[in-house]
Picture 1 (cartoon, helix red, strand yellow):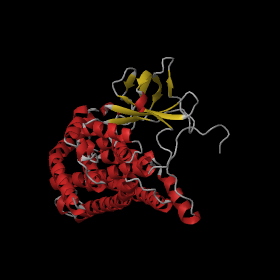
Picture 2 (spheres, helix red, strand yellow; picture 1 turned 90 degrees about the horizontal axis):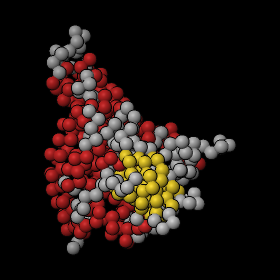
Picture 3 (cartoon, helix red, strand yellow; picture 1 turned 90 degrees about the vertical axis):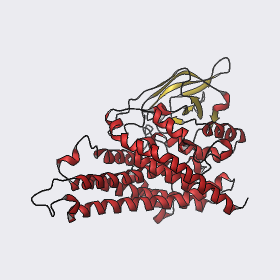
Picture 4 (cartoon, rainbow, N blue to C red; picture 1 turned 135 degrees about the vertical axis):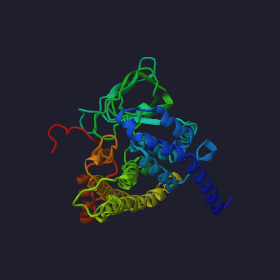
Length: 413
């Protein structure tokens, strides 16, 4: 089959998938504010997405997926984010893991996980700990006297775990070396808590996950940890992309919601510029500025999609990527972070200028767009990424591809 014919088939699958997802996205958008107000971790919503093919966008058709290219999957990720950014963030580890699977060097791993994801399995993560030193962890994965791998520890910020069927876990072995595992979410000794207390992204299930003597299948133990920066699929460029796509979706939602608010608003001010807000030139200017900020964010994300998608395809095909190409993509991702985060935060703050007290009504929940954007932008502080870009431009220092978080070791500066 020619590449052109394959492209037509992929486009057809994309159109059909998008049509099937449209009513689900609409339903999610309609219920987003209510679910957030009630703090409802609704597993059925994610299950509907899985059944409709959203969680297997990149999985080849032969394994039950849609076989979409990176750009097509990015389009749908942004559309979900515009419906409810909580869900895109909750599925972040899952979406990144698809890229990991596609380019994984172990054929048995690829086969096993493509079939799982193609069959509708959803993956969450339990990677980060609190009160740990940088580069160290207290969660241990060791073999007992009978040779069974056992997992013990406590993780925080374990985004998506309450929605997931499987959990990716970072740990250390008996010698303190990095190791990782994937365990069923319902495995013995696993307890997932909804105790995330952030003021935004409240439905991402980013709380605590506890492992108490949890058994791990030998085939799901991975020596060497999860990310050493050597693969683009598991590096910060790909992880950060999901944040960027989610922020672009939030901006799209802000434009939608503020436009609907102005369209339906009847009350104005004696010093306003028109009888109805929808005819007020100053109000329309604000909406136009918000729309333009959303455009800038989306344009930056699209630039990342083109560059990152091409690199992921080459990596999955087994190509040894030139360092210059990888560095260029990382710089672009970090540049986009500056553009996207700042534009979306400005837009989701500015939107309140179009109305009076009714714009801050809890029932409208317009504030959730800023809260969600602010929390996402805080995951990877802009100041550090801006410094990395500057160091690249001035000194030619390659951008960091992986990082760790925690307390600085004693005596460190």
